[in-house]
Image (cartoon, rainbow, N blue to C red; front, side):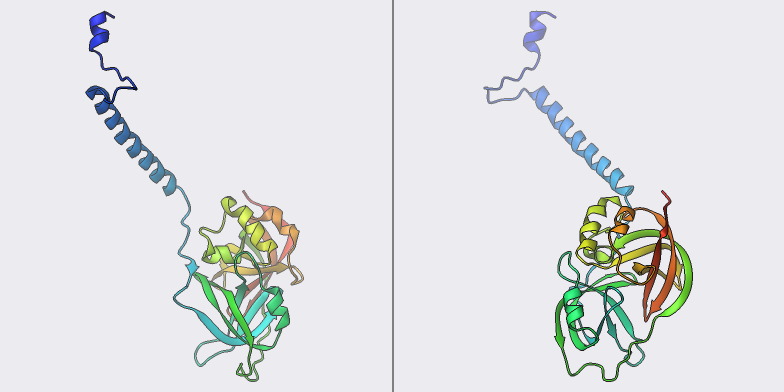
Length: 253
């Protein structure tokens, strides 16, 4: 390389308040191409992710109903039929990653007026409780129906925490959500089994152990995994309950 070639080539000097035009053009083209490439990479990566679903808090549709609180084995709110509207059973949660065992036990099978915010995803609705008050204007003579046994089933799917899967977080499932689901379930949020196949048209189930009791640490190793498990299914008004026999559980992938 001759001295003339070196002298004529563009060269940037940091303490000079100027950038040679050829370098300026190169950097501008590089910046545009880099930004465009990163945008295309982000689009390609996002297109491979599962649809997070349409779940979320229904802030514009506040919930207020009179009914009864029960433990089945997690707290649920039983609302009587009203005209052509059949009786309903709602799963419940507290603020954040907390359940509502305290209010449920304090007001068990006592008429209450319950206020809160629905968290809804498809057929799954959970009520985040805002306030529970004993009331004398509750449903007179309301006797909630007993669960209807639907037999023993082998279901494939995933164990999720009901609140996040319903829409408090999205997508609320999968390995990326495992740590959050663990915290929610430890805090008392009801676990939900999300099945790949329906039972009477429903694909989500409030979970209990095979005897209908609370689930404990035995489900932690199964969270966020695609599993197959057997158990008895019951219908509680419009809510399905899956009494899972975790001894039969196996990881499919």
